[in-house]
Length: 623
Image (cartoon, rainbow, N blue to C red; front, side, top):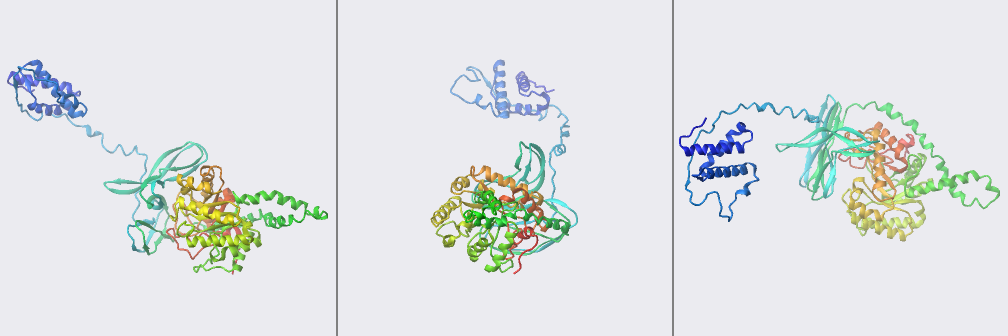
């Protein structure tokens, strides 16, 4: 108990006790706080009247409440109203009271029973901290131009481990979404999905793997836990992906590179020396599939019958003999025109072709060598060949071979620098195409592709690409070409609203570049599902009712694994087979043979996309 000697001080304690009961609802638990407030009474005017004294104490209680709760301070501010707490004629007495800091013993504080350990269990996350000695691709950020050297490293892994690995992508200016886990569901379902993310603790950013429960309300493709960033300009961003590392010896070769821009991300991949998982039985399996090209064999005779069909109606005696073949081309004619706006024959409509030698020289092939290649493409059951530019007499040699063997063509203009129609490199291609077309070759062309990933590669923006497309249409239209036009871009570019709004009105077909290998969540067996879903989005959600085609799609036999997207001949066979089964009639496969003259690229895979032998039954031309 606390006893004060004088009546006035006793009165003050009584008032403070009233204040304690009014201000502290939990009584003893916050007694220390009340005492601290009580010690502040030295600055409060006390009136020598019981009622006024209580009023002053109540006012003090209000001020204290304001101080604690930060919402009542306006009630006691000074105003012009002369009616205040102190009444005229009263004598003000100032009294300072000192007491022990604690009037009552501190209650025991057993509250630490709710300690930190319980919160972690409820977290639905499983976190993996990657070991240092794990061969995940290393994303080196080169902030300034210069020559950078990254040393060689060898690592041996003795057990399978799942870790976060860095991936990088180029994003344009603005608010961008990237990364995450892409999944395809056939119906409404709830899935529990692991995903890689970054967490910052005390300024240190760590990549971790967590899980989340995601509700997919209907069938479709969903991207779970993507990252979002705001970029002031186009830049490379690095983000984590889930990667499974299998036992083996991994080597990262020394890399020396010259950087000419700011903030460039260089990914140094690892080459695995781990034993291949039973490649022989898996790879031999597709060889019986070589007969698949036999299905469209009627297509081989289709061009000859179509040509012969025009003169044959005149001679009446011969009418009964060709009657059956004549009916066939009539039914097939619509199918032949279909590629002009949306697809072609069988489960492998088209393949890309460049007339450069496969070896490291990359020299131009002769007309004879080109003819041999085109003959194999025709025998493999393809209907159409896609070429990218006019280099190496592409139109003259490939065009002549396609005409001889009855193949259709997708031609194009390849933009190396900018989309300016007056750019000499662009203008030369337009002039060459017009000259070739006017020489009687326009009827070979089913589609004209203006630019290959121009926006994605940062060579053009949407407006400059539109200007180029319009210019090409005017020039080539005047030269006699009447067919459809498009440009080739990734789905991520087409989904940008400004791109669709600007480009859709000037193209007839939505041209996609869909490479499932570059999505770390797509295994070879799921490549077809992934491509079909992306192609459906291109066709249904971009340019209204305009058809969509997959103008470049394949799977590498070499290079680094990209998450679940592993490389190898067996893996390529599985991936290409699944793509053929689901969207082969709307896909241009990439490419006829490997290109050793290319740089390996960050993935180490750029030389290894040749897939022609999968369709040719293993018999590729020899020169």
